[in-house]
Length: 338
Ligand code: A2P
Image (cartoon, rainbow, N blue to C red; front, side, top):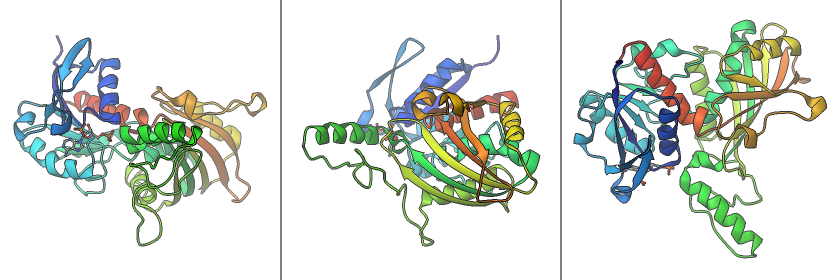
């Protein structure tokens, strides 16, 4: 019998943590034992895994003893505090927060793009930002063929990306507004019902938000393309789950729509949905619950000489977070790194 691994999930009660558990089960990851960790607030909560009720525990240093792989999705400050402890206890941490992504000795990995980078990990491997993951899965195959010089992206991001409590905000505020009542979202920076918010994460000195700068810096690191120019506008929309992106690229060499379709049709975990004549294009509602990245609206961009426009959609809780993290865990097993 093949080896099973002791796996911990920190942030197991959150939107991503719960999806991680589901994805581990669906992909039949070789779990020997599972440990579900969160704060004291939800210690005692029971969550089902493979037909068994598992009790969530408050995270403590001892929690990581004997753990092979620790999947973290509990926010940046929690990760800063607990990842070094988990590593010290012998676990490899796959971290979904932004805490470690740009550290020089931490690989930032999208398995379809830079799987080999897991090999130089020193205990922590970072899972990229959700919007970045789906964009690079679609763009890296084009970059390999035609070298991308410039990316201009606008995102339409679901509230699930801001956590389980933000989903609640959208639902409660929508209900309240329909009933003529007041509700102020507690986990989003502005009103989200019947609105869009051009503000995700905090503003930086250059007037971009931190979310937008993640797309710039993480894209370069994952694609090993330090010179690629990226400009992002990240927007929260009243969608429960599934991020959409309008992506415009400029390539060094000319690229036709047919060539782009061909490249994307052969790309790993990309599904082309592009039949304008039948009104078929990727939509968040269809990507919800799926692990692939969906690409459509492929057309010559009229504003650049070698320009191409695309519409890229994925389930941000899955490919943008949980699935990508579990794929990284699968790479650790494949390369005998745990
Ligand atoms: P808890 O349920 O105890 O608050 P989301 O991003 O969906 O809001 O989920 C965040 C996850 O991170 C939850 O599981 C939450 O657990 C966990 N978490 C947040 N802060 C801490 C902390 N200080 N220590 C441990 N887990 C935390």
